[in-house]
Image 1 (cartoon, rainbow, N blue to C red):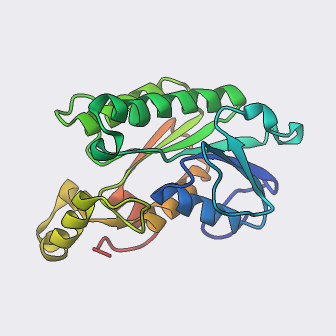
Image 2: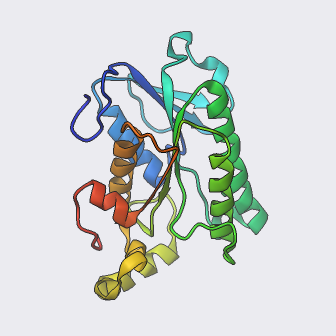
Image 3: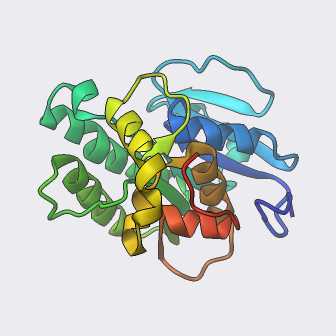
Length: 237
């Protein structure tokens, strides 16, 4: 075992590939992985180099999977996709779809071709291919497409509003975080999943679940599920 948080039984030299390591959740995933003593390496698929260095960090320019060393093949069994944007940031509905749906599916397909068998993807609470929200519809269609790729295990993470330091400000999340400070105690059932959750908690629950022995083909976790796995109460940060 690596530690009590991220058990990997009988595996002392494993590798992980991350797409979206510069984002809010992806950066937390990367941080936790690089602290694992038995980690063989973390490969990040990036368009621009990350502003950090680490002996176990290999930054791969998007699409250049040929630079992966031969001794890593067959050991990169885990993949994390933490990509996403907003309509304001993307500039149009089509541009948002290009990132949140098309790019995620493309990267997952390339991970599958490379031999990755276990993948975690960050989606959103409320994701549904029939949603009237373009954002949630794109997330829902993306999930269904990944399910059809045939991974041994697909972990779908559906957090509510995220708490953490983003590179860009998202006014909608800030507004909802403030509202939830007052209204969170009136929420019950599935509505409790819209209470903001810390990005570091999402990352911890993602890794804990991704590395578990799991016979299910697909696992879906909302915010309440994630915090239960961490034995933490759901409350505004």
